[in-house]
Length: 125
Image 1 (tube, rainbow, N blue to C red):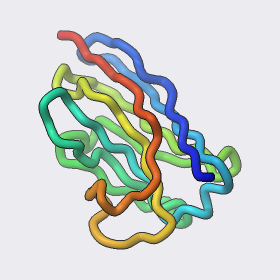
Image 2: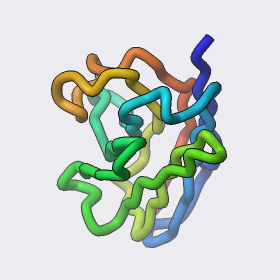
Image 3: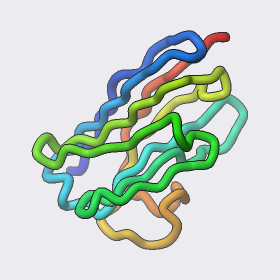
């Protein structure tokens, strides 16, 4: 059974940094792409960053470019999201997602069948 477990959320002041981790059951090479999404209160779930597990190719939402970095460690079956220069508008529940097949837009949550439980990140001004 596929399982994704996130950790690393918490509260931080604006300008601070947080690193999220996502450990996947099985070999991450089984997933063609993994991504981080977030859902802020009253908003739709949105794509934050995506990484192709084989090539390491990354894609970012415009709102986080230059501030967030997604990376993976296939030996540890893990994907990370380093978040720097955090803003209050980054406050959300962050979710790790994985897909075996890279089909459709990589920032569309409907294209990811596997999800973690989410971890809260709160940025205060």
